[in-house]
Image (cartoon, rainbow, N blue to C red; front, side):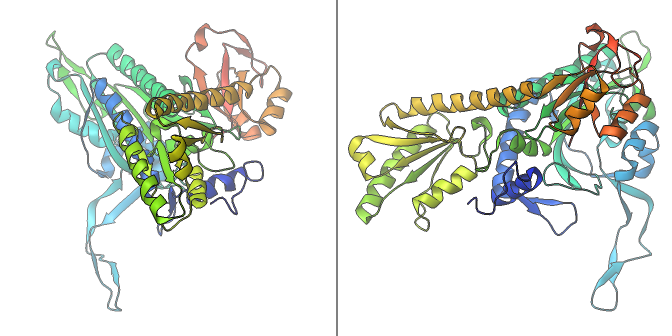
Length: 491
């Protein structure tokens, strides 16, 4: 399976791309910059969706769906918002094709739209136009809505899962009676994303807020979680925005308060996307292929029967079915690979490359000894265990693998987080090893821009306890700094 597969040290970018393709996660499509998510890759996304959807509903949110097409005029109502997306918008100008007289088709020039439609890059505008109809009094609040959808942002440089012209995501959009409620919602969803990243993805993250330069268009505050990939680059894994009353004022969304006064509502939006699959890959995978944490693996265990003779085949497959059924009774997702078109060695390599957390091999000798062979994907170690008690052993091992992956990723992050006080130190680390660099910053956009121009490093997040942290001297300008912020090169 891993032939012609680049190693991380040789070429990290090629390693990533090779892994996505060879593990059957996704492939490039006929549409430039867009991808086909293959069944195995989509199964991982479904696992993510399922976990997140439950977490959203457990915090009081409900799902809805809003239009893909947004009138261009809507984007003119919130200037900062449109500025953030203007260069990435796909625009629909006509609504009909016609025969071109040469055996093909052409755009019908007589079918021009009176107003162009934007293929949604995000849904704040269309949703807030809708909320105007939904909100009359304080009794209609809060609105806690999420939608699972696709969006289009016309990227010039694309990369499977990490940056594509079209991608899948969820976007939450909430409306509240007070500023305090909206701020609490934005912070609550940051907590949900953090919990998901660490407990399900086994990916440690830093919580913080974005600088003004990096803030979402139209937001008063953007909360974020940032993860560190194995190559020392950061990945923005999720964002939650406190939008203030900007969109409510732009779309005239008011409510009659308990005091019988008309007030604008307060808003949040928050989202994560299929780029999380890219983050999952780059956090855990190795030179042998994909490594998946058990909580998000489509198959947590694969059972591979081993046999040479027909009578052996029947016996080991029957035992494999018994084991599968027993494991499934406690909710374990199991694949019995009883294909007779491939040899066991091929199956071992295939499932190892596809990152299945635990593999069970069973052959005639195992039937005699009442044992099975267990192979862990995270450590690439093998051991024999009694069939009796296998279910409990498997459950314990899956928990152990999940925790081990998190601890390994946490160790990598900690070892690659550097606190620096000089510009020379800063440049040296960013240029060579990368990682998170904790450095003082004077709080100005000018300094942030100059650091980005000279090193390609950006402020990934400002820690939530920034105002209470140590004061110092800006690593670049030498001016006073209120605290250290997190710099890194990023995807």
